[in-house]
Amino acid sequence: MPSFLHIADLHLSRSSQDYSFCVLTEFCSYVIEHRPELVLIAGDIFDEFADAEALRVPFREHIASLPAETRVLAIPGNHDILRMGSRKLDVLDFGIGEFPLHHFQLLHGADLEVLAVPFGASPPSPEDLPPPADGVNRVALVHGTLTGLGLAGPEQAEADDAALDPLAYEKLGVSYIAAGHIHKPFLSQGSPCVYAYPGSARVWRRGEEGPRGFYHVRTNRPGNYDIERVELRASGQYRRVVVTLNADGSLPELHGKDMLVEAADLLELVLTGLVPDDAALERIARDLRNTLGREVRELALNTDDVFVLSGAASHPLARGFLEAWKLRYEQAETEQEREVLVKARELGLRKLKSRIEARS
Ligand SMILES: [Mn+2]
Image 1 (tube, rainbow, N blue to C red):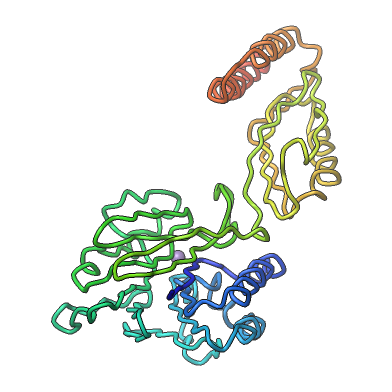
Image 2 (cartoon, rainbow, N blue to C red; image 1 turned 90 degrees about the vertical axis):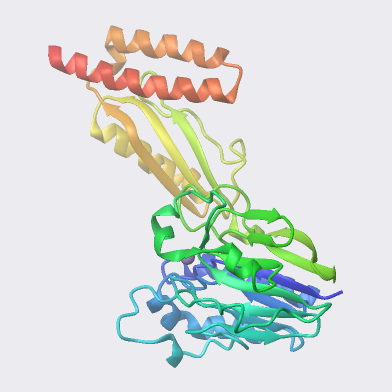
């Protein structure tokens, strides 16, 4: 059965070189084990042009480790050419079998053909490209935001210059759009065309929740795709945990295993509460880095909701508020209720702080 892997948005970077290459290594091990006919890389292999330049040798070594019978096809995404200046990707050797950089290219295989359209290039018109032959599946490899699918998200800011019309591809007889650019996985298995984003292969920034991975796609007959999502363990996950400081401004006891965090995770701790002075907050940050910080790949501390209020612990109004809040929080039954209470706490503390400070 013909099969291909569809991965995107690896964002290999010098700033997280060990981590991003661990992800690539795990992916390559999967390729070596499963020996698919094709590997499709839908853009943003690197975080920016300077990363492509600096990291092409280790990248090429990974590609060279793949079985000879597996063809690797890739296209550049917007990040591969980010801050490129007057330089060109053309001068760099990535060791990829097929890597069209400027214009679309149709790549033929036994039962599959791939229409690869680099970021910024236009697809051919239906007059220029006849429909695929009987029994041949045509897959498009693209990088951008497919319009009309409601793919809003943090990527929206980048979406305007990267809009792709899925209907233009359907008119070309494409039955699977292998896309990259949107970091949240998305799969729509409609007829006549599958729209698929595997999501970023690694956690690129805060907020990219859920397991990271790629698609392993098998086709047994024309227009029919059996799509398996494969998770990458080395990618870890982004996790956001809200920590409410104790009424006296101290840190409650925290353990990574209670929070279900794993070594490859990016953990964002959102602290909320009152501390007596800046030094207390610095102490808390230092403690966290020395404990939890060692249990995860990256610890991000968000202290926007921590308020410095001297004498907070002994202040009757602050004390009363935090004690009453704690009681309510412990009685909350749903995650939604707890979220509302955390927000209420932040608003309450903000108000309290301004009221107490106005008086003194
Ligand atoms: Mn992109």
